[in-house]
Image (cartoon, rainbow, N blue to C red; front, side, top):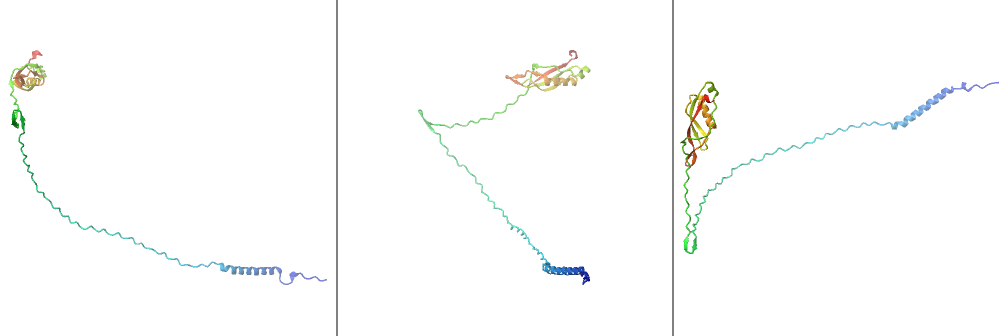
Length: 220
């Protein structure tokens, strides 16, 4: 009895054939794919860049100001007006009106202006010498220095009294021998004493009067 030889031993090994067939198929498919995809390859076109153009804008130049033409100033002519003197025309003198009366017609005589002489200002009369009565005569204060030195004496004053009886001027006619007593008497009379004014023609006038002022330590 004879047995057939297995197919694996006849010809080429089946695994190698399969591998070759598959490789050929892959190669064909790859070639076909490349052929199909070749038109789809993007063609890179190099386009030159357009150069940017610069536009220069010219600004208008401001015109220079034109100076105004010089103006000749001419002085105005001075018009001198001749001064005219207006001479008043004499007014016609109207004669006095005649007023008819029962006794006859007589023209009215215009009144003559009376010239009044200026009144001379009244001349103030000189003071008279008189003996005046006292209205108020307080004794002067004894000076402290005179008390300490035991000074005494009587001073005679010549006093000018105005129309109201007020002393306006005091003079020392006879000293007491001590200047401090003389000054105290003069100041007291001028400041505090009042007299009845002298009378002349029924009116008060200024007058001079002699006044004695005594300083006595025994009356203190």
